[in-house]
Image 1 (tube, rainbow, N blue to C red):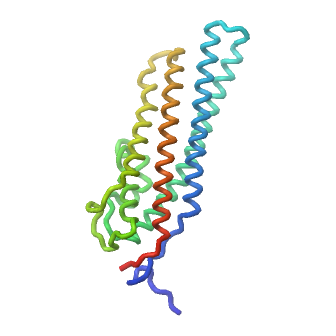
Image 2 (tube, helix red, strand yellow):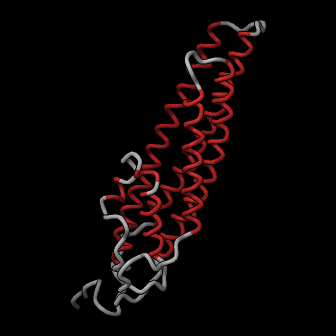
Image 3 (tube, rainbow, N blue to C red):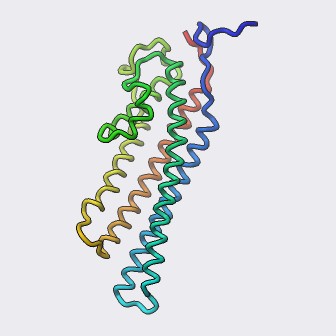
Length: 230
């Protein structure tokens, strides 16, 4: 029996499986959050050690300062590696989801396929292109959207994607503030501010991870639903 073209009438289009990579991406998102939480704890520890050293607390020496600083630097590298791993797997999932979405619906996405990856790395446009990429995948993946839809403009946007992206932008601002406020030599107050901002950033990243995991789960589920393709 000859296999039919996946785009022929009354056939479900052949899609790339997303289940396994979606689970790995989601797991790494929360691993990244855990690493960020650990880094925040080391920031507070460094602040307390420096404050105690300056205050002349008994038993506090230069070795304690070096140890606290090394632990904070190590945690920063751990956070970077966890984020890099999560980003790599997520972008792999996103690329596959984009290919699937194009097969499910012929609507023209606002950004070309190359921007699925590139949008995250190009300065300035990475403040809104990634959201458009994810939102268009969401819109064209929903069951019930006609396969012959021409453009995504008339399709409803996702409040979930919007909430996730605004949370990410808020985190970008929170991360940037300590760098803007710090001038010259780092003071004890600078260390305290960095720890405070780090705490807020960790909470925002956790919220963003929860929201993005829901986006991943929903799109992945939609791509398992059998539908007619015309």
